[in-house]
Length: 292
Ligand SMILES: [Zn+2]
Image (cartoon, rainbow, N blue to C red; front, top):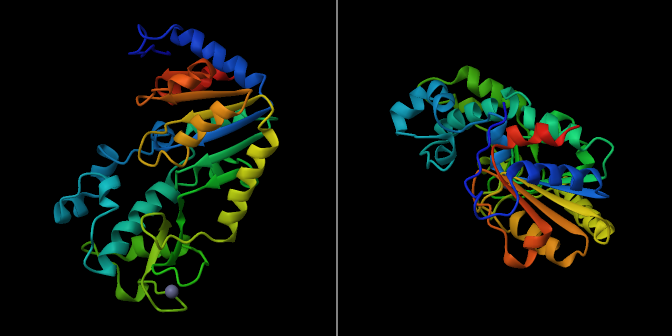
């Protein structure tokens, strides 16, 4: 059953049920919906980076390196490429290839059926693609676990890593992969990296720029229409990608509405309060209520 978990109930004017009802109406009458998805959405989908899921699958790495969760482990300064890829291949296999499509993603797809929509996400686990969203309507700004690139970005080609990752996972021992599996740039022979934004060498290939262009075009084409910015699980890690632009567009577009759903960090700037709905609850509990 749906449980009310609204710590802000006293400060706001609507109850959570009223907010959900209002959100449902706003979405059903929208001419355009832009989904902005952050880590909270994949969390809601069960792709958890800490706790049992991490402890059960990374015991050897935890013992050897003192890792505490997959988020911080992603920044571990491995001394060798064999160790780096032993960790990363397991991380990628779990979160990119083996993770099932989460129910919140499926619900979201139902909500958007026959809608004019676009998705911008900082998630790199490809859940939107796996769930069956139109790949022409997704901009995954921060990259994709499923690709590797030159660590010095000497060229802007991305390479699929599914076979490589599987081979690395199968053949690793004592937190190391065999040297023969360590990938090198085919152009400059530098080390390779996962295509996720973590430094100035992040590769943005043609598909990335095409998606960015489509996002801007969607905004421009719908700026005067009844447009909804539906923000899911976005905090302050990289607020300049989704959060702050959504607030700005809601302010400057006459008929825009911002819907912010998250477990915290729900504050809305004063100037757009009358155009916004914030729902403090689990995304996986709220989405089913938005479906007819
Ligand atoms: Zn290179």
